[in-house]
Each structure stands twice: as structure tokens, then as C-alpha cells.
Length: 149
Image (cartoon, rainbow, N blue to C red; front, side, top):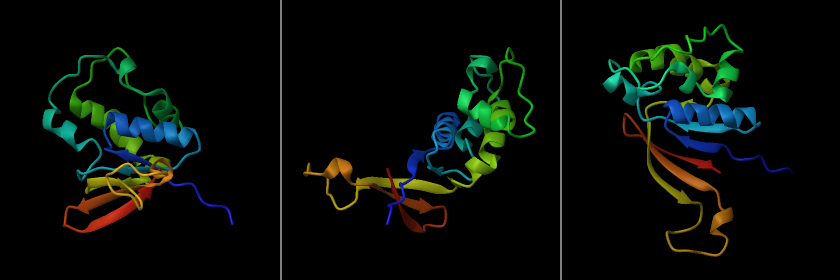
């Protein structure tokens, strides 16, 4: 019996986390995207009125762009400097809603610990081959564990 590969754990569904998920998918890997807020890039909402310091051309990841071009996405003007709200609305939300990404996105899921399956915090022989165990807590206090590589 062939062992199924574990997903790649990605903590956070902001610009870096969603780009990492796009790269994982591009390589045929399965991402496990854990986001503590109730929406992707929820932390950007706190500064959504602020304009970023670089234009769109430097804010859209190549692998993410490839996924988005599979949909009816309208790529923003590469010379425009987006606000945080535009970053979410015009890039991160469509990327998170892409079926290949959305299938692996867990919202309202805060990571409370990361460990190795069967090992404590001391160095142990074989530790590096053991899968990660991510313990999470949902907004309603439910705890859950995920195995990942």
C-alpha cells in the first residue's frame, strides 16, 4: 500500500501564505492553509486604508498569477499602487476563492502549537523524519490537530 503524502502546512492566508499555497499547487503538492481570521488576509483589514509602497507589478506572485489567469480575474494595472483594501479585493480574495486554493483553506483556525509526532522538545534520533502536528483552535474554542510535512 502506497503512503499518501502529507500536506504542506502554511500558517496564514495573507500575501505570503497564499503565494506559498500557489507554489505548492504548481508543484503538485497539497497545501494546508490555516488562517486565524474569518477571511483571508484579515490582518490587512486593520490597515486597508493605507496605500502600499510598491505597485502591483511587485505585489502579485507569479504562481498566484498563473492560478488567477485560470479564472475570469482582471489583473490590476501593474503601475498602480494599491491600498490594503485593493490588495484584498483585487488579488488576495480572488486567489483564496480559486477552487484549487479554497479547497485547502481553513478560516477561523488559530495555530496554538507545532510539534513532531511522537517526539517531545528534546533532540531525538529520527525526529526530522516525523511529521509535524499542528494543534489549532477555532473561534468557538474547538481544538483540532492536523498532520503535515
